Amino acid sequence: MSNTKSGKTVTVEQIYSPARRPADQRATLVGLGLNKMHRTATLEDTPSVRGMIAKVQHLVRIVDEA
Image (cartoon, rainbow, N blue to C red; front, side):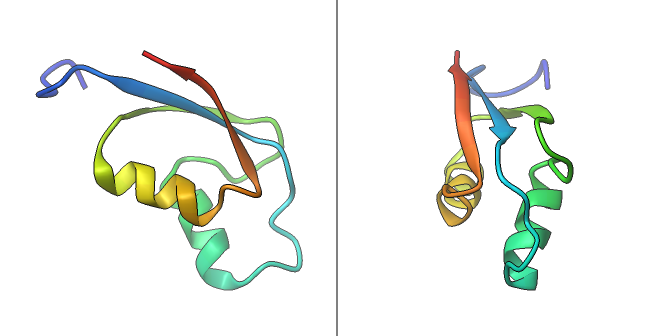
């Protein structure tokens, strides 16, 4: 990730279980690098990542925006 255009990142943490959620929400969590409780992932801050976070906003929280 060192060759990103903006250099901005966002760190998200999974705070709720994807149990009893639609398959597309589970797949979105996996796409974000989250599939277990309290796991964190630092991702490049892009519109596509922000869209993924918005789709599962009820299951994750933003820890840090740098």
